[in-house]
Amino acid sequence: MNQFERVAFYTLGCKLNFSETSTIARLFEDGGFAKVDFEDKPDVFVINTCSVTENADKKCKQLVKRAKKISPESMVIILGCYAQLKPEEISRIPGVDLVLGANEKFNVLAHLEKKSEVKVVHDNIKHTHDFIPSHSYGDRTRSFLKVQDGCDYFCTFCTIPLARGKSRNASIAATVAEAQKIAQTAVKEVVLTGVNIGDFGQGGAENFFDLTKALDDVAGIERFRISSIEPNLLSDDIIDFCLTASKRFAPHFHIPLQSGSDDILEKMRRKYKTSLYAQRVERIKATNPDACIGVDVIVGFPGETDEDFLATVHFLKDLDISYLHVFTYSERANTGAPKLGTKVPMETRRERSKILHLLSDRKKLAFYQTQVGKQKAVLFEQEENEGWLYGFSENYVKVKTPYNEALINQIVAVELTEIDRDGLMKCHILTNFVS
Image (tube, rainbow, N blue to C red):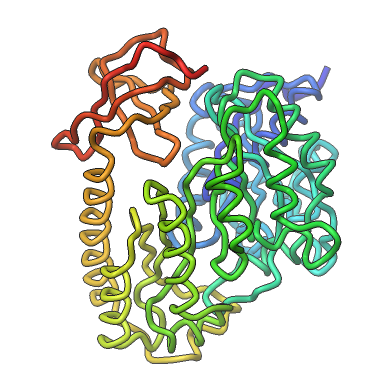
């Protein structure tokens, strides 16, 4: 019998990490392990790390300390982006037993042998060429499907190409096969995830537009959502298909902007200008005014002046967008950004972040107000809070209704009635269930 029997997982970071953690968890279960909660005194802890911000690094260290407090004799394994970027640093964290880089994280069971000293298995990211299909499970409502990994862009603020390697993917046929596995479960919605999913195919015979058309024919999945796509890769064909011809793709796009200043975009080494970004938003809204558009923005990039920041604010104010994800720039090793301009004081970064968070709140409220009185299809989730049930419409409006167990994991026709004081949409359930 294996000396280890129980394993717990903790995932830091993005949807892509969640899909990969689920795949690794299935490897453990196939190997005879019982998956348990983090607090359940497991024999093995697997922590899948992120290294997008300094806080993610700190969180990893806190989790190791917590794991050893819960189960002092346990084995702690660290994998993911932080493990690829700083393996030796992680190996010095008290309590860590095994550190696996990008090439080895899916071979974790082969390395699961207790050592008297920390074992680090790590290779140069340039040697990482394999693509391992993955999807998340455990939430019967929604699954994250990994369709692409790595990135060839090397934006000056980003460490992901150093942590995940070059852009790569499986074939459309293999990706559809992975989606069909999800279709055999109770999952109603699939979120397509990756590092740079619009780069699917990397200019070869297959591309992301072809992938969306193929996935749209997968029976058994009610709804697909695109997690995030670069504006220069979001073609008119993709927009028009998702918003007019598709049976299953949600009218919801998340499009990274990062800055509304063309000077800063150039320093970031982004592959577009604000004019292109505005064209994409205009195309989406002209095709479907109800479409939801989310935006990533970074504040405090080196050399970002007050004028640059104001350009971002004014650009976003004029755009017909629905919400913002605001990131405060943090210095990362082995990136070009720190050499490109004067360091922005942290206090200034925080102030700029607050301004954009308030703008996001206003944009979201304005978008929700346009939806009052309309009929939408809402996928209700397991979550219950003080007698309410929550879900999301196809265009990503968060909806609440009095708790009714029969609605869980159902796509239900509703009328959106009013916005409550918490900024959530109340609804009236219509008699016909969509599914």
